Length: 302
Image 1: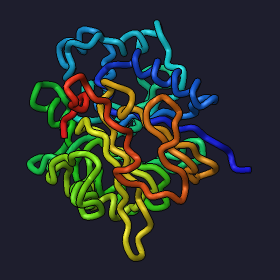
Image 2: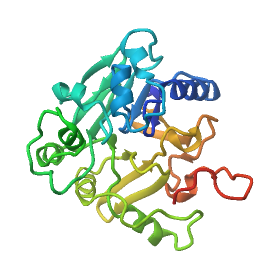
Image 3: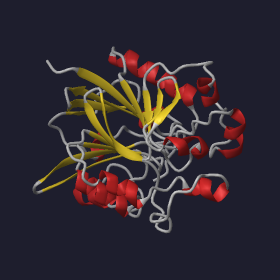
Image 4: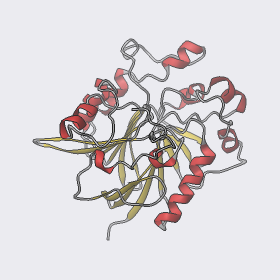
């Protein structure tokens, strides 16, 4: 029998390491097994020093939790692999563009590439698209402007992935353009309001259409979303976009593999299965939004 793996993915952590560790504990308990791999889709904000977090982090009101992991006071319970978003400790990441460890079992994958992890081929592209900078060289992030520019991917990084094939899982920070239109075409009366048609970027879309990964995970826009890209002669790419780590229902996503095949998947920490092999992957697999006292979906941002 092929080896079974439980893979968990996290939306933009924004420094909230303690809570996502608690969520993963809950997922393990509900699924009755250990989480083997954890992937984060950018905006992790793994600042090594508390002062850096307070000065540079996007979510400055959050505690500087990663400093405890970098200092060895705490340790993650499962291997965590992450890509860069547009809010990171870019000064620390600049000298590890091909990846590296920031703390025990906390691994930055790098700006772009492909790795084999527990038998899975995982491709990744860090950052977001900024047309003005995509063909400019990456400068050492020393000042505010170069720190911001470090969060943009560059043409050579995208091209590094264009010839990659046979990818089980691909991680990007920013959504590929056009997936909202695809969802609208499939369901003119969607079960929930859709985000803007203009969300995402065309460069990542070309990359995904070229590489054709079996699954694609995205962050950045703080919205949960599900759609499949496929067509004549094109195998299916199932896309899961994750919310930021404010609530687990749409910020945690899990995949259970047998060998290199996903046999079931779900959202949140309840362990409930939202999809099984052979079923359709679309908006219907998303969790039902929580509703506040006024009948509005909690955290609604669509």
